[in-house]
Image (cartoon, rainbow, N blue to C red):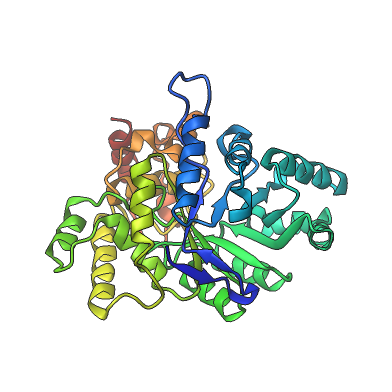
Length: 377
């Protein structure tokens, strides 16, 4: 296992961090998590050299922290650092923050949390956290020894990331990043900004929820033609670890084989490891994915709100993603939400307001019907 220095903190962490959000449910169907299997996987990762474990209050219907706490008994707690999170929807004042942290410490069976994150914030959620005194609470809990490092995880545009990063004395940040997201959310600019400030960066969604683990045919052809043979998973992780600003790459594993494969991969990766030819390959891979785009919607939302409630950019985003990553759109969470909220293209009456507002001059009405038909089979 390769270890990396976490920026200004100066501590070492395993390049592979185990994400505890994607464990399988019990075979009986009675539980959202197979405890015995999850504990075995966690300990297998730690025995293989993993020192960074990531969970959250809300993961797996609030059971992930409990199972992780059980896995870290018998001397395993002393071998690792734990990251968990405070969701904005669970707190509203100092008392509720204290109660939540106490509950999480109890579930994890520990007297301190190493990396405590404000969960999935954007500017709006950050302003909310400030309004209820969360920054002072984090400062106080750090002084009390109940948390070691003050952190946040982020989903939002770059300008909001920059604002939040500069607005408080953060110890670590967790962002979504992969070779397809260089200009999405915090993106490469955000990664490099944090690096310049000495703030360590932990990466989530390095495989885009698994979508980059199995390449569509035109992408696989590029991998196959390259002289060095690696799996799509290894290429994705290798690309991430090439960045010196990256401290830890999170990966959720459901099987022993996935743990073992990650241990093998992260035993070989380090900053600056990729050659110019390999970097060019990944640029070509990105372009091959992008070439599968169904419609050139930029998500600008000039077409919104639709008079009939159709979620135009949401439908086009899901349509593009299904094509890019060769996935079944009927299983797409966003599409399920659009259906449940009655925001589907079946509510379009062809009024044309969206097309008149679209700066890309897209044929929205016809494309919506095509997209909806394809995604609902």
